[in-house]
Amino acid sequence: MEIRPIHTAADYRAALREVSVYFDNEPEPGTPDGDRFDVLLTLVDAYEAKQFPIDLPDPVEAIKFRMEQAGLTPKDLVPAIGRLNRVYEILARKRPLTLNMIWRLHERFGIPAESLIRPPKLPVAA
Image 1 (cartoon, rainbow, N blue to C red):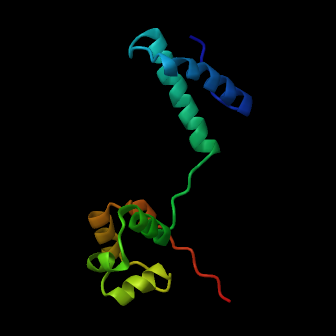
Image 2: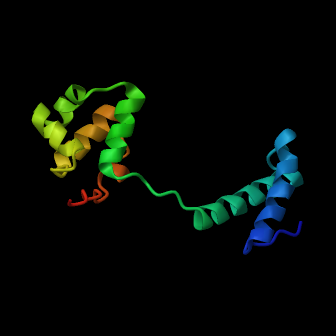
Image 3: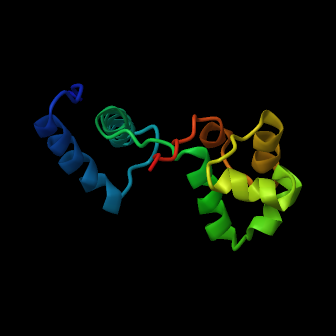
């Protein structure tokens, strides 16, 4: 079983071709083909994470995404953020989230804390 690291786009395409054969008929874990499949997937994942990183959304975008996803209104955020005017200030990026707000948004709505603790994008001054 000769498996090499993926260093180039050509190596990546070759690994994808090789691993794609296994998708239609996935080999049993612990078999030579199963081990090869597992190692190739790990290499492809590592290459993709390095070459095509996916950045987390900023806090306001994460909140808006969850609101859209769950059909929430700004009023639904009041228990996590505070008064309705404060919710609007957060959504308009006029006020930063506090640690307590971040924790409550994460706990109540399942918004990843990693997204909520990122520095927010600042509004562009006109």
